[in-house]
Length: 261
Ligand SMILES: [Zn+2]
Image (cartoon, rainbow, N blue to C red; front, side, top):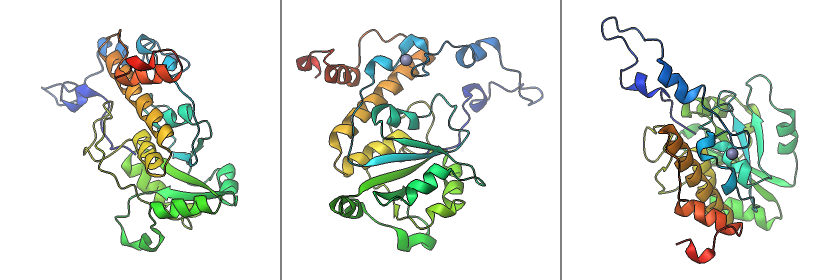
C-alpha cells in the first residue's frame, strides 16, 4: 500500500510549471526519455541497464499471499506487489473491480483448505471485533489450513476504498501488521517511514508467521529491485553486485557463499 504522490519529480518541485502563468509546461524531451522511451526487459520490466532477472530466486512458504490489486497499480513499473509472485510461485493476483468481483477469488474464499486474513490497519472501531493477531495464523496452521495473507495493493486511498467496498471481505478476520520496520522503498516517496510498500508488508508477515527463508529471499530481492531501479533512473550501471544481490546469487550457486558477507 502506497501513498498518493506525484511520480513526476519536476512537478513535485515546481519545475514543471511556467513561473509566469503557473500552468503546467509540456514535458521536456529528456524527461520523457527517462520514462516512456526507456528500454525495458521483458522478463522483469526494469530498464535493461540493470535487469533484475539474474537475481530471481523462487522458493515456497507455509503461508500464501494473495494480492487484491487496484487496476491502476498493475502497469506501474515501480509496483512491488509483483516481486512477491516472482519469489513465491503460489502467489495469486486478483484485479479489483468494485462492481465485478473476481469469481476465482470468491471461489477460493469458500475453499476450506485456506484460512484467509485481510491485512489492514485496525485504526477504525467499526470492525474491531474482526481484528486478530499472529496467534490466529498459528491456530490455522495447527488446523492444517493454509494461512493466506490478502494484501490490498494500491495507494492508501485505493486500499481503504477496496477494503470498504468489497462485501466478500466483510466476513474475514482482519490482521493488522505490527512491525517496527521502516520502509526501505526508494522509488516513491512515502508519507511516513512507517508506511511500508506492498512487498515489505509481505516480507514482515512471512517473517512473523515463521516463513523466515521466504522472507529473507524476498527482502533481498526487494533490495535488489530498489537498487537496480534507482540506479537506472540516474543511468548508472551497477558493476559490482550489492550484498543482497550476492546473497541471491549465492543461493543459486552462482556466487561463493563465503563471499556474501
Ligand atoms: Zn530482466
